[in-house]
Amino acid sequence: MNKIAIIIPSRLNAQRLPNKPLKIINNKEMILHVYDSAIKAKVGEVFVATPDQKIIETVKKKGGNVIKTSDSHKTGTDRIYEVFEKTLKSEPDIIINLQGDMPNLDPKEIVFLSNYLKKGLCDIATLAAILKNDEVNDQNVVKVFTKQEMKKSTFSVASDFHRNITNGQNDFAYHHIGIYGFTKKALIKYVNQNRSKLELERNLEQLRALENQMSVHVGFLESSPLSVDTEEDLIEIKKLMNKL
Image (tube, rainbow, N blue to C red; front, side, top):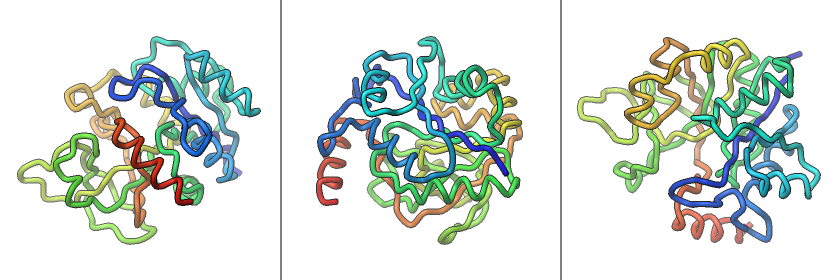
């Protein structure tokens, strides 16, 4: 049986929305909403990885697992690797990198991703949903391109990631959802590669995998959880989650 760890990288100094993980939604910090979703998925141990003492105190106060990491990491994946290597002694067979800014992510979607990874069909798996008309030109919405059109509960092969719909792009475009599952071998390979040209140009770390010929498969969801990147997103997520 595969051993799975869900690691949530989190930090306070986000440029667009400082102190984002501690923003209150429905009387609870955003990072705790994400942590609870991961716990409810029941696929493996859950950890928050952070360099910030305020996040550590918040998670510990609610009885959660939280690991203090270096504050010098360039990417969230580097942060989860520190926990994988040092705290978990490189034991998990599957590592899920769950972004800490998706407080309305359905636990079933984490299960969907982890079940696919167990099949051993790819190095990295992630998720996507329909790209809405008002998202096409939104730089905050990352687009993932796939080689085949995706349907409900299916996976396809990722060919590119971009913040724009580029001219001449013939593949199918979807709204990328920021959750990644790595096999142990893939995570080790990934963090030992230099940051790639496109990764730096587009500020999208998933491009490092594609530029190093790693296979990335994308699972289709009918609707996407809201990723909170701006004050406007925070207002919107509060409206959505107040209705629950």
